[in-house]
Image 1: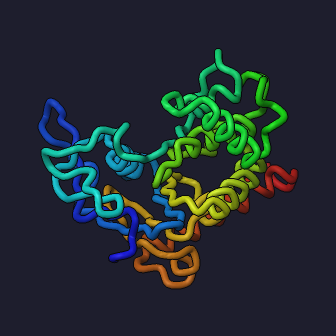
Image 2 (image 1 turned 120 degrees about the vertical axis):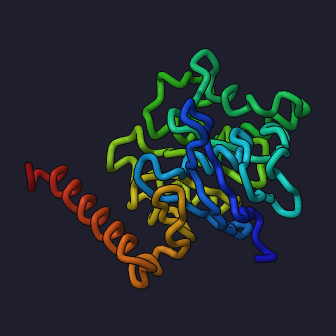
Image 3 (image 1 turned 30 degrees about the vertical axis):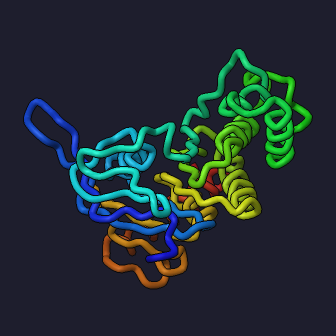
Amino acid sequence: MPDDLLKLDDVSLAYDTPEGLLPVVKHLSLGLEKGHIGCLLGASGCGKTTVLRAIAGFEPLRSGTIYLGNILLSSPGFQVEPQERNVGMMFQDYALFPHLTIEKNVGFGLRQWDKDKRIIRVRDMLDLVGLSDVAKRYPHELSGGQQQRVALARALAPEPELLLLDEPFSNLDVDTRERLAFEVRDILKNTGHTALLVTHNQAEAFAIADRIGVMEKGVIVQWDTPYGLHHQPASEFVADFVRREALLAQRAQAYLRGEGS
């Protein structure tokens, strides 16, 4: 679509192995509008994290193109360096620096900024995620949910055009995970950021995303709204996947309430 900020067209990715090329992603295409939150949802090994790494600039393409706006980021034999892509990334393990205070962690990507501007930006980011009162603390002094919000503030601080989130809530307990998913969605919507999330957890995907791509064996089986996936699944696989994940979520909630074993 012409108004898509992120555009992947016919993207294929593979790894070199002693036995030859191992295809991981096959002819994948998607578009994500500016200000929207997308999600790649699927089981481990389906290729979703590899797609995220390709968008970030860490994996070369075997075929296809990746555009951010009108800028070509990747094609076979061509790659814009990761640090030149204006793309932010939140990692699964937060990747906070334990020896730096919270405010210095948030400001880490702003070292080239003017000092006064950097101070203001860090303060604004901590206000945004509700952590102004812990600016002088260190990561180990915060809860998992607070550390995740620090990681979000750090990723947003350099004003990226696109934010990538790699299984961002997987290290949190169920209640914190769901609450934080809604918080992150509110923050991204309030700031107008475009983001792409990777997860295996349907509850997270449906809580945060405007568009979800259900993946199987390196292919997006359906790229649709949460409503569309529930009410108009494109295949039996999508229907079964959505039902199965919903059932697992219900069982997990029942177990936490002490209603099951």
